[in-house]
Amino acid sequence: MDRRDFIKISAAGLAGLSLPAFPEAAFAKSGAASDKKYSVVILGDTHYDAADPEVYHAGYTDPKPEREANHRKEFARNGKMWAERCPALLNRAACLVDDDTAFVFQVGDLIQGDTADAETHKRFLDDTMNLMKGSVAPDLPFVTVMGNHDVRGNDDAVCRQAYREYMCSRMSQELGQEITETNFLFRKGEDAFVVVDYPGKDLDRIKSLLNEARNARHVFVLIHTPVFPYDDTQYYYWYFLGNRKDSKAEARREMRALLASLNAIVLCGHTHQTEFLDWRGDGGRITQMTMNCVWSKASRGEYKVWASGAKGYGTLLFKEKPELATPANIALFDEYRAGIRDYSIADSAGSYKLIVDGRKVFVDFYPGASPRRAARFTLR
Image 1 (cartoon, rainbow, N blue to C red):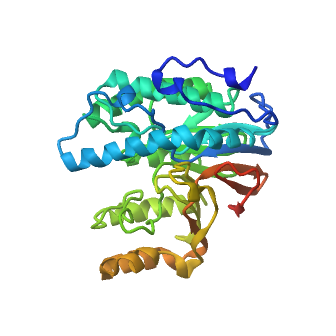
Image 2 (spheres, rainbow, N blue to C red):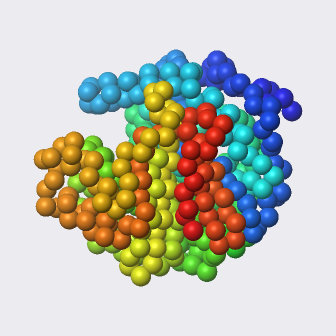
């Protein structure tokens, strides 16, 4: 099959998208990967959008004019990057697929969201799923997790229900098993993958799924938000069970202890950065890889580390906004910093390849559309 003919595009939002072919890309057949050694191609936040806002955002409004204005700036940003840069990123990702590739993952915020009704929201999801799957690996399961943009619109409850109806059916098709909820578990050989939706309100089900995965060789948690506080002045509190007042501290510590008891590997997004964090505590280990495909400016196609090492964690926001260096915020980052064994953060977008080789687990990062790997992160 000619890769330029990989998908029949029915929506105007996809009709103008050019996807230059990489003839050297090899597309693996489902089941070619072994259980002992296999790989997964991973996309971070993608925020897919059409160049013309009317394709998916016709009728969109927000009760707060300032917030709507900011969202419309995002429409313009996304439309431009998907016209100019992101098609090349998808093609770079396609080149990472080989004979041992078992899946393609996307870590939430698949779409920009901000739709007026359920029908448009489902069409947006379907168009984007078909585009991503067709671009990267048509023959492999494409697994995504709910992000905050994936359920955003005139009425978030309507969009959330539309997402559930569409994505449970789609994930069932992709994985060949019945998926009835947006928190679910699937396996690859000895390894377990637990998918946790945004914002993870059903903690009882999430705990049940994690405990079900307990005897796996590796427990991978596919979640949109990081599980560690994020070093950013605007979004440091946007992590799993986090908020400005840390009012869910007891729940987040309980969940952290559960993840540590599983020696969990967390695959996430949300921050629009490439970040690696390896932490020991609560009697176990949590390793987190945060991934990003929002190639909003040319410089994000390069790998430049902002901060690294345990001492570098949680310092950027205090440098940029000293007023955030409150006793509570300092204590929050210190609580996690004490257990950090390895850490780095970079303002980079690109594609990622998870490699599982027995007990060893790596992630290779390819910034922008670069043919060369910029970094290898050792997760296990």
